[in-house]
Length: 185
Image (cartoon, rainbow, N blue to C red):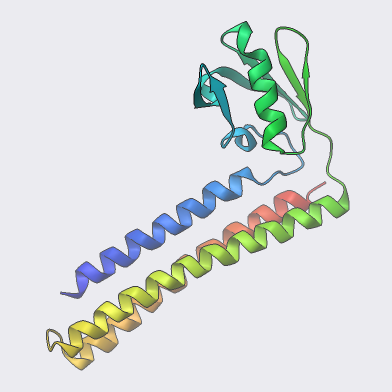
């Protein structure tokens, strides 16, 4: 009876951690990363299309990103989308390819990014804790309806807490890793 609750908790908590991982990849570090373009959409003949579906993105040097649209006519639209995304990078268009120079981060900017990572981490932990609360409520409801014993309820709550602690530890480790990556000069 409780196995379903555990599966539900693990699945929903894993989704929260996965979403957090995706958000984390968008936070800029000292190196040029193509992940910062993941959320950018380009107006491709009236349809918002992910930038990686209308252009080839490359990272030829640690501080340079090149974007070459499949169709030369899309150069302006891609450039406009990058500027509109407000990611703090300025594209340089040479007529056939867009080059984006990624400047090194200042100490102040690094600290801002670390704060952002910590906020994202707290939001992910809150999501995990909300799942724990929901599953605990379900387990308590099962006990109230006499479908499980009080001892089973307590064992169930302890198991859900162990699952929660593991996911929160995973999030903490990811935050620490990203913080180290950002602060590395």
